[in-house]
Structures are given as C-alpha cells and as structure tokens.
Length: 505
Image 1 (cartoon, rainbow, N blue to C red):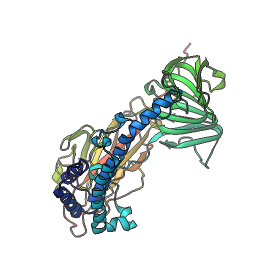
Image 2: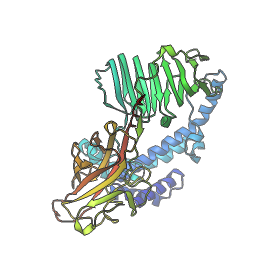
Image 3: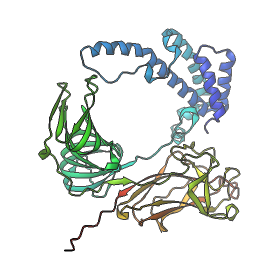
Image 4: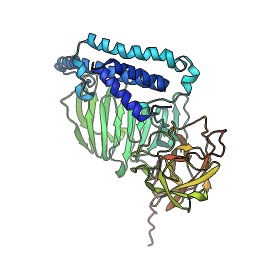
C-alpha cells in the first residue's frame, strides 16, 4: 500500500533537512522509523526522492558549463539542441557547494536506505514475482495513472497501398498516437481526429504524434484542414509548418532537405530554429513556398508547385470532435456531477434518477484529477460502502445534432470497482472484453478501453453503464464496500453532408 499522505510529506521534509546539511541524529532515526513501519513503499519513496534530488543537483551544477560552451558554439552560427539552464530546473542552493560535500551528504541517505533494503525490503528487491505485482509509484507514493494510447486518426481511403513492417491497414481502421506508418507503394488518405485530412504519397514515412501533430520523416504529404482544426502541425527535421486555415503540402528528403508549399490560405513556417537562432517565423500565403536544407544551413523562398502534389481532395469530410463529459470534470469530492446520472440501483440509495456524486472512494483508487476525470458513486462518503451483489446504472447524454451518426467513433477509457455488467448505447448492448476487480486484484492503476462504433442516432444519445459491486473479501461476503466508476472519453465524427441542390427548372 502507498504511504499515507501525511507520512509521505513528513518523509520529504526530513530528507530536505538531510539535503541541507541540517540533519541532527534524531532526523535519521525518524527516517529509519518510517521506513521500518511502512516497508517497501517507504524505501521506494526514499530512493525516488533521493534520486530526483541528485539529478537536479547534477543538472544545476553543470548548467554553467553548458552555458559557456553554447556561447562559444553560437559564435560559429551553429546552434545545437536547446541547452538545459537554470530556468529549466528547480533552483537548488547545493549547486554551488563542492562536490565532496555533496557526496558525503548523499552517502548518509543511501546508507540508511541500503541497510533498510536488507532489513525490510528484501522480498521486493530480490523476488521478481513480487516486483511485477506492485503498481508503479509516483511522487508522494501516489500510484501513477496508466492510460492506453489515444486514437488520433482513421484510414479514409487507400489506393494500391502497401506498408512496411508487414502492416496491413483497411479503410475505416483507427490509428493510435505515436504510431509509425511507412507507406511503400500507392497512396493513403487519413482523417485526423482534430479535423485535418492528410494524403500520403509513397514512398512516405510519418509518425502520428497526436491528433493535431504529425512528424514527416520522408516523402510527400498534402493536408486540407477544417476551420475548427486551425493549428494542425506538420514537423520535419528542419521545418515546422502550422496551419492557419488552409491547404498545404510538405515534402521531406532523407538528406535533410524539406519544403512547404501553400496551395490555399496561409501557414506559419518555422525553419531550422535549432540552427539559425536569429531566424524568425514567417507567414506564407497561397502560391508561396519555402525550402530549407539542414546540411547546408540555408533557407530559400520559392514559388509553390501545386502540380507536384495532390489537388483538392475528391472527398473532404473532416472529423470533428464531439463533446462528451468525463466523470467529475472541474468538481470537488462530494459534489453532484450534472453530466452523470444514477438511474437505477439498490432501493436504499433511491429514489432514482439522481446525480452521481464525486467520491474519494477506496484508498486503493488512483488520485482524482479534476481537470481529467474523477471517481463517481451513488453517495458522498465511501465508507462503509454499499451492499454487495448490487448493480447501479450510470448514464451520460450527448447530442449528435449536425453529425452523421454512421461516421461517429467513441472510445471510452474505464476504471471500475468492481465490474461492468453491461454497457449500452441507446439501449443497445456494446460488445467489449470484460474485466473484473476483486478483493485480491485491485486493477485501479490502468484504464481499460471500450469502443462504441455503431448504434448512434441523430440528436440526443445516451450511454448506460451497469456497475456491479462484488464482496470485498471471501471472509466477509455480506459486508458493504466501496463502489465507483471513472470514465474518460474520445469522440469524433463527420458532419452531415449538405443535400445536393436540385434544379427545378
């Protein structure tokens, strides 16, 4: 179990005294006492705090040397990657102290940690099976949230396309963030979730950084961007292009030469920032283009060559984000969630429907994140919980006015205590790979993904989630225990196509 927050805070304060050379013997004694009391989790935290502090010391101590080196290099007008400086790190008064003082100071902390590893932590560090079962830990002993890769695009059209690394893509298939695509032959059109349509012409290699950011390693890429997706970025080794409402094309060669051609509208071009620090960004309008060469460190403005690239897309139906509310957005524990409703469940918590409530839940839950998502349940306090073998239905509603229901994609990321009995879209069950948490398997550190790809209707839609509460332990099958749900959404679709104009004459 992670350390209680007050013990983690005290441990950080005590270690800070040690780092500042203001450490009386009773401080080390108290650190040792906390470690012995909490075992593995305390030892992990000691080493984590100490390693982080050591890294900061090293960075700050070396920043002066970096700055001096960069000053000399910049005189040759060749600028490397942005150096780490004092503005990039937490200030630390220890940076100016001699290295020998720092080494003696660190030795005391690590001697304590090492001795306690053998005394109370051996099972964790020397038994690989135990180590695999422990969740990852963050600052303060809080479990780190593990989210699956986000969906950032889908395949719209393929023309004689073959892919490297034995990849087989089909029209309608979704693509994940950080996915690398190597198009060997043919052409491919991708719809980015933000609202940009891109066409790849082989040979072409790209990496999908996010739903509005693509890195072009080599090849030709043409982009047409919806008005709501302004800010879409295509990056290359020597050039970054940011859309300002336009159609544009980018090419990148293996030798480090990149070009951007504005076919319509305008873009912001940022050439070779790392090599020409005085080179400012420039605005390019339709008919203008830019060529940069990394090997030669040159920048040239040229005329756009529209014939080299794909003309206006034959079918431009960009995706548009759909607003669905994650559980607990911008709310505090104990508040009602106006976007989530409990519509059925144990009679003791009726009458139904009533708003779901933000809950701190069980101590094994991940920390709530009001700007991301939070746990919701049927009551304000988690203890003693709700009856076992009970099912409560949580619902959220969203509107598809103006969207074509046949084009809608919804991807939900779920944490649940204890299991989802059924998930429905407008009353229709959704198929998904089931999982369940039990008294000995608390799967609260990683989200599970459920995709909803059909069953949508024009106008208002409703998603229903049946959450089942299992016994907390076989020895107490009837004992009430916490129950909760946490959801984060991705949703996008195409707008309804306008009806063709009929000539009545």
